[in-house]
Length: 318
Image (cartoon, rainbow, N blue to C red; front, side, top):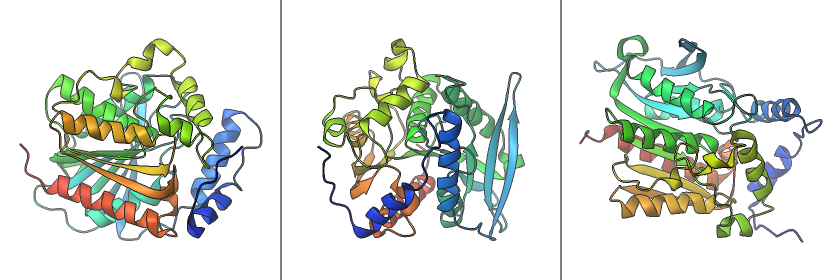
């Protein structure tokens, strides 16, 4: 029997609208086509106050497309602060267009450059391909002070869902390698572990927009080798220590199988002495950020997200 989720009228309308975008069949291509159509529906017209440019990070083995959102005004003398944004989509769907509904407003509201990474996706490219591309993008960004007009000492890594997973994993890897770290990590309903026995996976097993079965499907497609499921590059909660990571903002949706992942991550960060803010989006569902222009609860989450990133970007480096 399906659980009843007490949603607001705005959230129910969002679910109903999202439900119109159904894959024509069970192929990955059909899934991507439906997801792209959903994304287009919820993406507003571009803000004329932003300069938007597509580039590619050129490597020896592959080119990684990136999109750069830049405020149109004159850059500060030291360069714009920067957000490296990693998009969600279960490591299977999404791309440079899919999250413009949030990346463009971030550039505007933060007066910052936002860089979006079009990392490789499964099933064509399994773990750790997506992670490797994000790490390559981070390394490339560190050398782009002049070319991109950014202050490479003022960078926050952010992402939602699978992108939140990649952002947290990236912070762990940077801490392991040493060197310049982000000023913070800002995650929205991230998937951070592979333990699907946590209470939220049971309590929200049939939640609209993302079920526990969906989470298991995406993990199976991206990381078919179960031996990788304890690798912190895939499951940051599997890391033996979260000490030394940058400050975090983690937002979760109340009716989301991944809710407990975010809460556990914050608890472990705090236990390790890392400042971490936790935002529980009551009455919200996974993927709800697309409704931020229509749903007051989601708008509040976005406002908290922006406020947290702004504080990170303004903080002095330790």
